[in-house]
Length: 254
Length: 119
Image 1: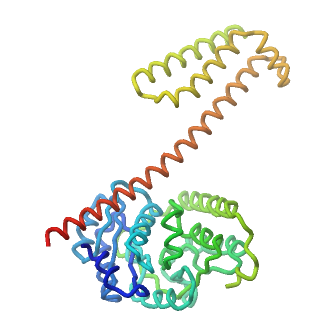
Image 2: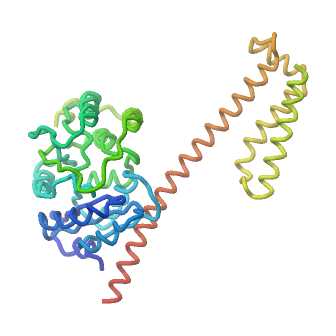
């Protein structure tokens, strides 16, 4: 029996937490991420979802003590994260917190995220670098994109979101069920917010630190940024159009 | 205009032959060859039926140059084909992602069972 299945059987239902780490060619960082998570949450299992890396990501992740879900071919971030959500849902986990495999998310913030997830009654918790912090370690281009999407999402969500592109996200079982069935595939963070809001789910932002990348460098270029903005805008509006019923204003204010 | 229509006839015949050969060699499935064959036959019929071409040209308001009506119509047929194929490709991509995820999850479960049996 795997560590994930043992954990779901042995723990009280309310504390079943899984840390999900999507990774693609992150052999230099993923080991450190897994160890940092184990240090912050000693009894919580870590599942690395390997998006068919060409390097030793799988070996390094297993060596660091993580369970590994290895995809047979490259699916991109959304498909990779959704595979983890599907497995977590099948194994009966109540909560899943996603931490990126490049080491930019500080594992010491996970207990705070978990507390917010359990205590707030919200279906989703976003680790935000802007709630109390100043968004350090954010490029100018990304900061501009975040400001733009804040403005776009404000009327759709009915409440402000400070860090809509954050991948440091926790979900409870209700959101897990939705995401295991339907999850945006290419640039999931912003669209996922709309998917949840259309189902009257709520989210809360928790202040978190953002660290510099441990290895490698970001693949974002100006051309990719333009493609990203167009793609995400289209995805947001498609999700808005998909909505069957109008949300009453009272439930938006939550 | 005659040379242009003759060229369109040759093009449509070549397209029909190419699609049929591809189907015979199993490079295109029969269900996906139908759209191409319909497009090629429309092109062939219009390039060989002068009165029909003039009728359509009159209807769409390009009487001064009837082959334009042919291009418009064939363009529309091919737009429909591309749209249909975009839907098919999207569905295939969704299926492919779901299958890859399912394979990974099943492999994970198999490995877990093997580990359990080994203990």
